[in-house]
Image (cartoon, rainbow, N blue to C red; front, side, top):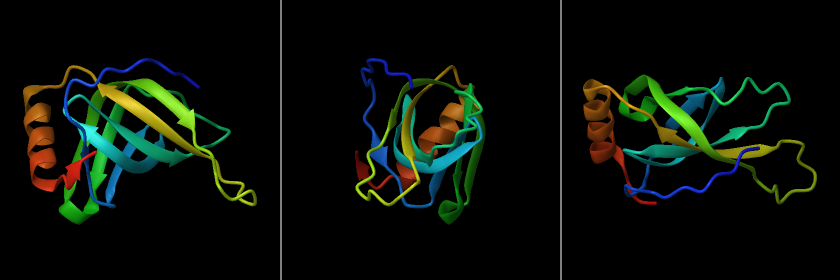
Length: 120
């Protein structure tokens, strides 16, 4: 698992329960998002595909879909499961967005403004 220092340049926001990120074929719930990146939690698989160089954002509750946002992984950590009986391992991955097109920036900013719930 990679770990890197991150200095957030933009405020992070929480989204509703329906916000999903998919990176390297790993879908997971978005924990927080900003114009500079996002953090999401997904179920760990022994057959990891890799870091992925792009991320898709889906939000069925708000009829939103954005694909192919360039990104890089800045941190990834295995989350501690409080139940010793669970075989499911969860991972939190933090992504930094790369150079987006103007249309992608406008679409992402409108989504954050309209659908964020609070600062993270």
